[in-house]
Length: 167
Image (cartoon, rainbow, N blue to C red; front, side):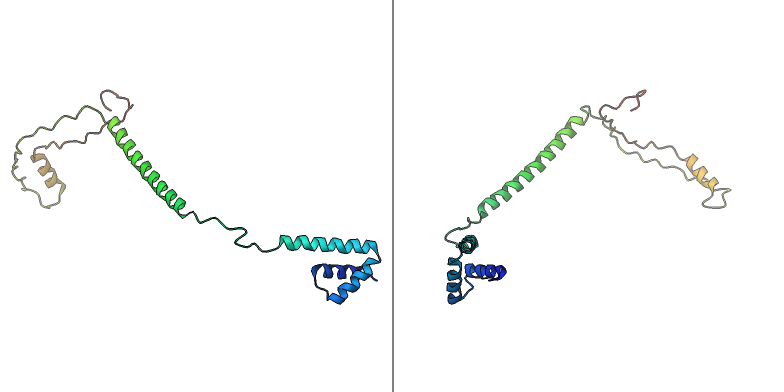
């Protein structure tokens, strides 16, 4: 018998694909030859191991653990609480740094008094031919008293050097 055909028959027999009468003929043939009988038993062992390894898992045998819904919800609550605490800590740190960096001396209070209305006489328009002329605008500006507008007071940054009293 051809060794390739014999090997295919042994594999088919080990897998259970041969009819019973052909399987009996193969067993009778390999009984007379010890090397072929050892090879047939080896193929049967291999197919038994493969079928045990590939057998389906039953839920009773291997059950999955319950879904940890409560642990996940607790983790989410803890994560949001920590995020809120971190934001509150950042706000408190910002308020503390602002209070620490603000100078302790208060700026001088503005002088409060009754507002005095200054009525200026209209600028003379004699000799001015155009309303938007530079001569008329200059005459109006020179005839009105200078008003002192309160300037902007800039607070110095900490560690900024003072140069000649000017910061």
